[in-house]
Image (cartoon, rainbow, N blue to C red; front, side):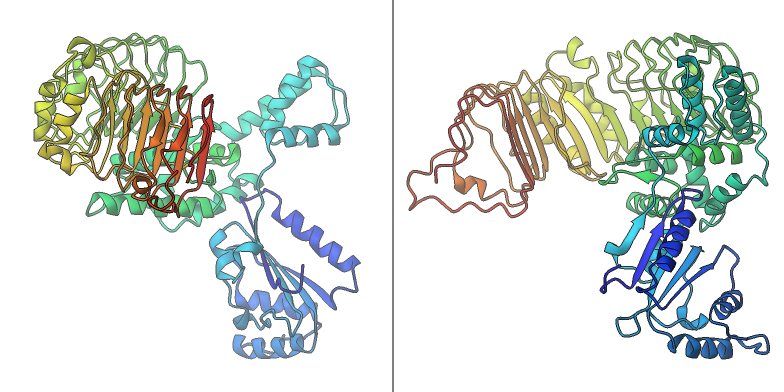
Length: 638
């Protein structure tokens, strides 16, 4: 601790090792007697009171408070006793909420009194409330699987046989401590016992379970808890896209707001709270979240009576145990070839049946007794070519996700699904828009990316979209156009102006989004496909992202809102920007990536006449990347 640091906060999930670190700090400070006049460590705990903390602190400074009943009087006496001491280090372990140092009688750490405070907690918010500067907040993360394995091997000090190693890796994954035994049967039994205790017979008094569940219980309300438990539907170690997760929360009815933006804001608030409580982990850009294995085990345990989660367990058929009390179910990534049951699940609101690569048939009556279903995810079932008509009667359905069902040729009538908000049909084999799509008056998101309409109707695709004019609530559209005439016709129509976000792919080929920045829920994207021979994009003035792949023309237009520009395989381009003056219009540009353009000689044309060229300033540019440009001579000769 340097002289400038007064308060240090450590936060992390329950059981991750915060108390162990705090005790190590305590012992180290005791050994280094020249640093502090006194080192004090108190455990706050979940149910701590001001009176209890005053008693613990008084004991550390040999102050008798037994005759004093009033907390205010106790705080004055304790403050006086502590102020007589200088250079005191105080460790407050396991803090669950903000606690006033004044109320206890602890002097505020300052340079004058030499006090230092270390706080451990599960919540980032508590660190901030205790006035920890951002630079002095440390998150204690779980060990990676490799680190856990290395530590395990170091402590066990046994050379494992290959067949034993396979099982011990799984033991480490379940976070167990074992003695050094090289008998495969004992390790197999140990693994079985661990899995039984964590998935079936977990004792509610189990210390690990209680430790983790405290964080869950301390969430603000039932809405936060339900949103957290929803994450248990995803597989272990699954990277969950945050925008998709919040979308499912909204579609399932866990979040309801006065408008779409209000719902999204609520979702972000809940995500932040779950991350701050260390119940979810996230990347730096907050583009995805994931659950630690133990946290997920705890969530699965809590939901055992209302959820059914059988993901990536090689199921060949759906369980017959799907019953009337089932609220949410996930069977992702199994080996089911046929669904022949007709379960009675009137309370079921979310059903994840994605990525069954061998699934070919779903019984006609499978959905008959699922009238409460709101979210149906069948994405990635590449072998299925038809869906049962019973889907047409799911009148409460809000999301129908079929993307990646490559052999799906037909979608049943959607006319009755008037509650539908999201329809995902990307990369399916359908050849025409579903019957009744014009009745989906509440539809907000429609994904038609890379469907085969453009193959069977090579020109005039826009005429097939006439039904979309009825979709007045539509906010997001993802669609492919065969040519620029279709594209221009659509973006010039009144119905295009109501979109808040869109992905428009013009021409053939599949786009490769090449940007480091995550696209949030309101970003606007245009992608130009590999077979394009003409380009005129100025009609869409608010475009923020432009990806140009395989464009054969000599010039690319630009516009002021552009933030991300990716140009690839445009072999006739000599330059990207025809003048520095044109580039000056791009004051919002953050990333430029140019790759595989054989004839490109310079990024900005000209620059010889210094009297006429405008100085280039791109104040927001963060990334400029060039790859495989064999004839590149300069960025700008100005």
